Structure formats: structure tokens, C-alpha cells
Length: 523
Image (cartoon, rainbow, N blue to C red; front, side):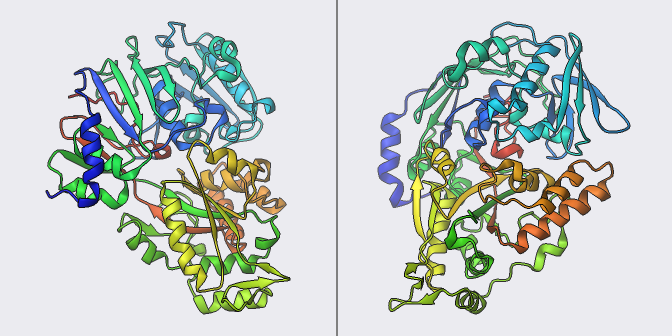
């Protein structure tokens, strides 16, 4: 295969930097970093895969993306009223430190996550907990204030990994930064932010879920994860053979990866990832739903999917992928691309074109500030949207932040719009995450506070039948879409790219991780 000319400088650099890898070291590359690896205090997907490598959950998610399977909990029972889960734990699990894992660790972990002082943005994933008690060293009573229809699925997420209390309390604010002690197949060694993460094999590990052929330990002594933000450098480094695995291969270069005889490209399926732009509706410029709708319908999603993602995404006209559990088909016609209607809505809202064609109102230019993470699909798509919106007289002001800074900047909320690509499992998962008023200011950055939405969410989460769950989550979808709180743009494909010498690789859909545990990997 002929190497693209644009990649030659980066390829040469990669060749110079490359060093022979030790036979027992797995070399991974990623494009972004995270602000912390404390699972209770982050929503950032680049944290999720590291957390899942080093720590375990009570329940694992099977390859089908919808079936919970035993993990640290070998079995469980659910009370008829859906409020009490009794988990029976494995008795052979240890942390990397050698400490035995018991029911007391479960009680501590869930209590910490739900503690308001933790300020856990994903605390809701544990349900409305009444209490978590150790009945004996290997039996846990997990009691809810109300049923939570998605609990087992949510317990597979990185937010709900089990923690060692001694480790957490000894490190304090440095937990998840300087160290973390987990029961996972990999043990945390060190982290140089924006540079690399190093891990070692957890030699005692033998409790991998049944979805893997190898229950543990992993086949490698060490793992080194390099962080390379620049896209062409990542492409060149992977194509040169410097790395064994990446889930951060740019979509626009997937055809080149497929054509390379030394690489293997695998698409994660099923996969629900929505690239959206959300409105902070308490900002005056975007407080009017007509303005928000105009921005959403003035763009051409199919052109963006083809031109920016080169076909590695599908246009998104709804917040929930039609293939996802509890998708509401009635939302399909709410967003209809129509530049003429967009212009009419803006005129009606009082935003008139100035001499340069851009719109103004009361002396203010319609120039919303848009926050994105640099070197991501969101930043590239934002530039395409910017061009479409100029035709409607809207002047998007894009601010791209480094991935390690973006969460902090987004938390400051000094913007009209922001963008991420959010992974989810079900309609209830995504709706509960973003549109519950209790999740203001993050991840409900829209500042959407609506009692009816909260009521439907509560009914969906507490439903005891699939029909009641789907009905209530469907009502939420219709409500928030008609308010145009987001601009859904693309349902993003997710790939992993591996060196052909790496065997046993399989893409997992869980929270953009692709790499999940790595128990079956070998050379």
C-alpha cells in the first residue's frame, strides 16, 4: 500500500522514536487523557477504559452489549418488589495490594459513590440506594428506595467498580492520580499526564467473567499506554508497527488501516455513540427554542457524515439510536432539516441579518460560544457545522480545549453550546444521565429543570415491566426533543485497530472502551 504523502513526516518521526518492544509488554496508543482515574468523580470516557483495566464490577456486560453476566458477584437474587438485590460474591478475589475483597468493600464503595460530598456525576448509576449491607463476608444486601429497572446493566459501568477503602483514604485527593488499588487484571504502576500510563500484570487474578476464554491472569507482564494527541502521528505510529492496539485510530484513516496488511480493523457492534451539541438554555442567546431548532435544522448531517467522518458514522436525527432499547419511534419526525424554515424561525425570534449577512438582535451578534475537545470528531464536525450555519446568519465561535482541560472548562459553563460524543446502553441510560434535574450542573449542562421530565424518568427507572419502562422513557424523548435541547448530529462508528501479531482481540461496546480487560490477548 502506498503511504499518503501527508503522513511521511509523522511516519519518519514514529520510526525514529520506536524502540523494540519487550516480548512481554503490550503497547497501546490512545489519543486523549483524563483528569483523574477516580471512578466516582469523572464522566470522561478516556478514564473509563483505564479504570476497567485496573478495577472490577460486580457484574460484567457480555459481548452483545445488553446481557449482565456474573463477575465479582457470582450470582444474585432480586426481591419481588424489585427493591432488594442479594449478591453472592466470589471468595477468591484480591486487590493488587494483596488485600482480600469482601462484602465490606462493596458497602464502602457504594456508600462513597452516593455520598453527596463525593459529588459523583454518575452516582445515579447505583440507583436510589437505601442501604448496602454486608450480611456475611461474601453476601451483600443491596437495598433500593425504589426499583431501578436498569440496575444490573448500570452496575457493569466503570462508575461502579469496587474500591479498597484503605487505599482511597490513604491517598485522599491523590486517589486515582498517584495510585489506585483494584481487583482488575492489570495493576496501576504510574501515570505521566498527557504522556503515558504504565501497568503490570495482576498475577493472582483468576476471576475473569465467563465471556472470556482465559479467566486470568493476562498473558503480558506489562502494559504501556502512550498518549498521542496528533492524528497523523497516531496513524503513522500504528502503521509503522510501533503499537499493538489502539481504539483511537482516526475514522478518516480507517480505509488506509484496512488496506495495510499488518493491521486488523474491527468494528464494535452493537455500538451506541451520539455526537451532539448541547445548549446551555439559561444563556440568553440560546434560551429561545426557535433559535435552538433553527441551528439544528440548518445543517446537513448526511454531508457531514460523508465529508468529515468519511462514512464512518450515520446521520442522527434523534437522540436515541433506533436500534437501542426503548427508542421512541414517534421522535423520528421532530427534526427535519430545512434551511428555509431555519431562516424563518430566526426572523420570527427577532434575529435580523446585518450588512454582513450575520444576524443581530438588540445590538448583539448571533455568535454563540461553542466548547469542544481538541483533536476529536466534535472539533472537526463543529467546523463543518460552522459553515452550514453561516448560511443562516449564525456565527459559531468555536473554542477547542485539550482533553485534560476540557472537563474543567465545560464545568465552568461559560458557553452557549458544548459537544461530546456520549456512549450509552439504552434510552433510559441516556435520558437519565442528561435530563434529570438532579444532575445539574453536570452532566445536565443544559440546566434543564422540568418536573414532568423528572416524573417520567422516575417512572421509567422504577418500572417493573418492560412496557411501562419504554412508555415513560419514550415520553421523555419526545419532551426534550421538542425543546431542541441538543443538536444530534452523528451516530459514530467505533473501531479498534490492532497489529496482526496480536491474537484474541475483540472490540467491546462498553462506554467507548473497545479494550475491555484484555484477558484473551496474546502474541
